Amino acid sequence: MVPRYARPEMTAIWEPENKFRIWFEIEAHATQKLADLGVVPQSAAKALWDWWATNPAIDVPAIDAIEAVTKHDVIAFLTWVAENVGDEARFMHQGMTSSDVLDTCLAVQLTQATDLLIADMGRLLAAIKTRALEHKFTPTIGRSHGIHAEPVTFGMKLAQAYAEFARGRERLVAARTEIATCAISGAVGTFANIDPAVEVYVAEKLGLAVEPVSTQVIPRDRHAMYFAVLGVIASSIERLAVEVRHLQRTEVLEAEEYFSPGQKGSSAMPHKRNPILTENLTGLARMVRSAVTPAMENVALWHERDISHSSVERYIGPDATITLDFALGRLTGVVDKLLVYPERMQKNLDRMGGLVHSQRVLLALTQAGISREDSYAIVQRNAMKVWESDGRLSLMDLLIADGDVTAKLSPAEIEERFNLDYHFKNIDTIFARVFGE
Image 1 (cartoon, rainbow, N blue to C red):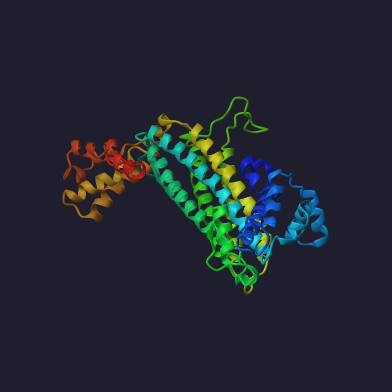
Image 2: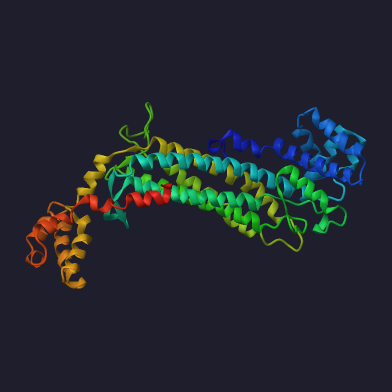
C-alpha cells in the first residue's frame, strides 16, 4: 500500500487492529455457540465477552513479539488473548484450525472493502450521469482507429461509460456475495471436532454465508473471481481515462482535466497543462489488474490445503482494494470537474470539409439505383480530394459538381445528407436504454 494512493476509510480495514478485532469476534462467537451446545462452559464465553466489553486496545506490538517466538500468527494472537482473559481462554479455538480464523476474517475484510467500493461506484455513476445529461446533444466527432468517423454527442460518450460502470457495479455486488463465506469446519474441513452449527452461528453473526465445503480453506475460485472483477473495473477506469487523455491533446482539446489556481504543469515549461490525473489512473489500473493473475494461480492448492496463497493475499487484498478505492474517487473528481469545450468539438467536427457525412451520400446513391460498388467509388473519389486538401475543399461542393452524383440526386437532396441533426435522432432512445425513461 502506497499512502499517496490510499484513503483512510479503506486503509483502516486492512490495519492489524481491525484484523485482530475480527479474529476475536470469530473466536468469541464460536466459543459462545460451543457453550450453548454444552461443549465448553458458559463461563468461558462470558469471560471473553466481558473482557471485550471493556473495549481493550489491541496491543499489536505485543502480539508481534509473541509471533516472533511462535512463528505462528494465530497462536500468537490466542496467546495474547489468554494472557489478558485468564484461564477461561483455554476453551477458545476448540476444534478449530487457523484457516477457520484467517479465511473467515479475509471474507469479512473483503466484504467491508467491497461495501466501500460499491459506494464509490455509486458516486462515480452519479457524476457521469450528471455530465452525460448536460451534454446529451453536444455534437462531437466520433472516431474509429483514431480517425474521424461520424458525428456523435459528448453525452453519448459519457452514457457509454455509465453503462459500463453500471455493469461493473452489478459484478461487484455479485462478487461481494461470492466472497462473503464463512468456514469454521476444523482440520481438513470435516467438522470432526466441531459441530457444523458453530459455523452457521458464526456466519450469521458476521453477516456471511456458510461455505458448503471448505476442505479446511475456503476454495480460492471465489477469490479469483473477486479480483478478476476488480481488474475489469480497473480496465473500465482506464478506458475512460484514456478517452480524456486523448481529448486533452493540444491538437484535439475538446475536453481537459480541471487545472486549479496555482497548479503547475511542468518544471521546465510554464505553458503546460498535462492530463496528470488520468495518466495516473492508467497506472493505477495496471496495479489493480496485477492482482488478477496471482489470484487465479491461488486456486490450485495442494490437496485439502497449503499456504501458497497466503503471502499473495496479504499483498493483493489490501493493495487491490485500496488502489481501486482511490482510483474510483479520483475518476469521480475528474468527471465532476471536467472542462468541456463544445466550440472546439464543433470546430474539429467541421475540420475535414464534411467527410463525416460520406456514408449518407453513399446510401442515398444506392437507394437512387446505383450499385453499392459504384456508389462507393463515386463518393470515395470526391472524399479523397477533400482528404488530400486537408479539409480545405468541401465534400458537398464536389458532389454537387459531380455529374454522376447529380444524375441521381438534386443539389437539395445532396445538401440534406449533410444535416448534422440527422445523426442524433436516436439519442433519446439510447439515453432511455442507459438511464431509464
